[in-house]
Length: 340
Picture 1 (cartoon, rainbow, N blue to C red):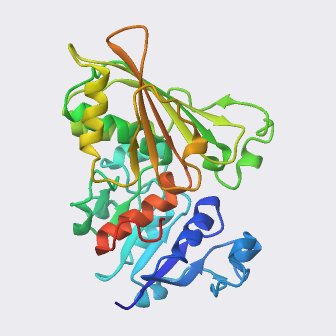
Picture 2: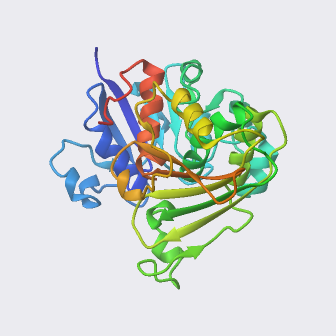
């Protein structure tokens, strides 16, 4: 089949670079335009030497006229920018957004948490929030695909099957997540200039991180009940990777094996989700540079309490890889294409 033409907007950040690295290996894709603002006129290899001599176009400023000969637009832009582009889409364009512009169903929630006015309210109903393993059937129906945040990806993949099966109590889920500093974007050193990112561990967004409404919205959707949780993210002295430690109380008679078996059955056809043996201690090193999510169920000294460990690479499974996985589902490509 002929290759699909792709435009990447927001190309020289950590996510954008990783997206290009993966797409140049995708046999059904042609990268036609690479767009940026401050980097206009530069080569993408100026930001990543591994992309030298790959036949990639120079970085240009986005113009809506480029959409006329484009099939897929990937946006890894600051929040609010993908909404503007969505207003110019034709019927043949598919927009896959890696920011938060279409993650929340309610415009008031978006305005509350992101302090921005939504510029494409009419397109919220035309978009889908797509964790690929969860929405694999529905994603084909939509031309605006919103990719989950990196933290929510690591959290929702283990929790969704459990809340659907009503195995855990919903009134006190504790989520402790640690991410490499690449999750804060290329401007991380300016944003956290008073912190030694290479030697310190720091909590941030305590109690009110922007991923809270996204996690809440999704857990409520699949549990169909009120959900209460506390989520605390941390920046760790490593470049990439996320490890989420999730503390759960289970309903009566639910065992550790039951939890693992439900997860294994739920994801038995999903090649990127690895449910490990009970009490397996996992690390970010297990998943770096892959589109995998490793999940382990661990016991505690209390019979009705368990700890779930979930590890992903925030730049791939939590970002660019997940976006490509959604694209593969949308167009019916083999799910591993460009990702293995």
